[in-house]
Image (cartoon, rainbow, N blue to C red; front, side):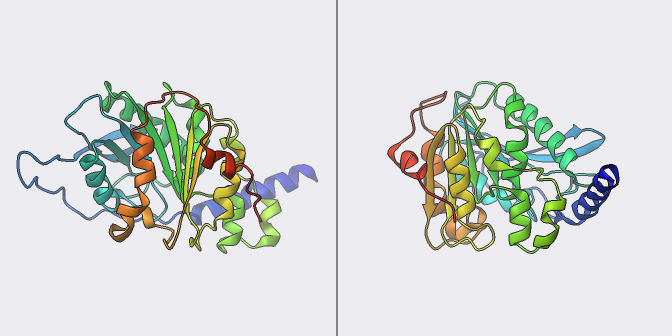
Length: 286
């Protein structure tokens, strides 16, 4: 009986997994640089298992400058992050964004296992692209928060910090709250991306950024992750911003300043939490 139940759970999970991801295509052409002085994104491909993934690396003049790798959200691909990469370059921060299997121009189909492989392969490329950087940080946005925390402890060398932006505390809970799975079926499914549990095991500072007005991933998700974090740098809650504020041109200038300050911080190991972080640790989720 237990074996049959286990098989049923596995089959249900695989069926839902095939429908879980919204994979946009990238139909843009690489832009021509406006002049010789402007930073130019470098497009590249790399292998992840039997798949070929696409990435965009935006360097800056200083090879020792901070560098950020991005695990983006669902229904996003490289062009969505181009304005952010330009803003980061203006702030003196190199950036590396990649498309998961099946997203943008990347080949294959997404699954939890493949996205895990993708993130680990991308991190190796990120390290190779930023050999002299004095501070590396990895950011997970929305869906990317689960992908990042799934593999964070396997990154080698470890980054100097992590950022969770508009992330969830539990993929299973988020799937119920967004209507992707009915509440009655939740207990049947595994929770492949339990961000709160994994945040408690990180050995580097974690910055959590969210919006109080996020109706897709509601604020208690961020509060749970922040409360669970072993080395919380801060919990930043923005007002009057939608779920995708991180990549929307009208919100970029307001959403990103806490992340820019974190990127330029001097600490490179676990640090004492700020007062804001200590306060966040006492927030009780609904």
